[in-house]
Image 1 (cartoon, rainbow, N blue to C red):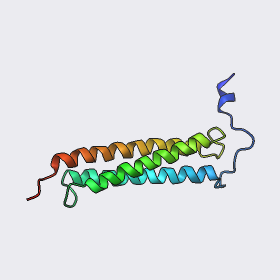
Image 2 (image 1 turned 180 degrees about the vertical axis):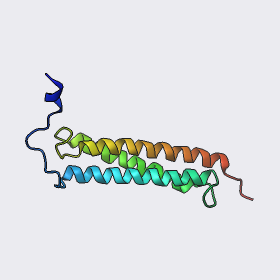
Image 3 (image 1 turned 45 degrees about the vertical axis):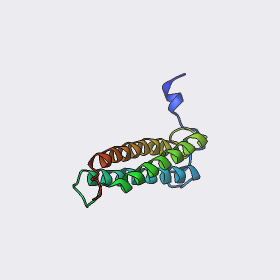
Image 4 (image 1 turned 120 degrees about the horizontal axis):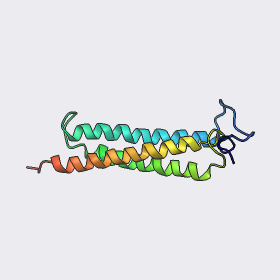
Length: 123
């Protein structure tokens, strides 16, 4: 079995411009995960005192939730994909969503840890 045989796409691959259900799901998952990364980055910047006021805890929680949601959506796309990479079933986008969602969760967790350290007591 050659490497070319393993990487070859089946003849039923979707057209490049066709937006299949798998591609749509993968795109949605990747965008949700990317939103988690962006919100987590802003919360991380806020937790160190560079942007705005307050510890940035709300943004960190939002980053954790959206990153986790992106991971779940990406996992569903990867699990239900019935083709290989390049067939238009969203497998590549699902994998990207998993990785970006994981980054969002990590950044959100780091923001939560920093917001706990920099939180000032009320009074």
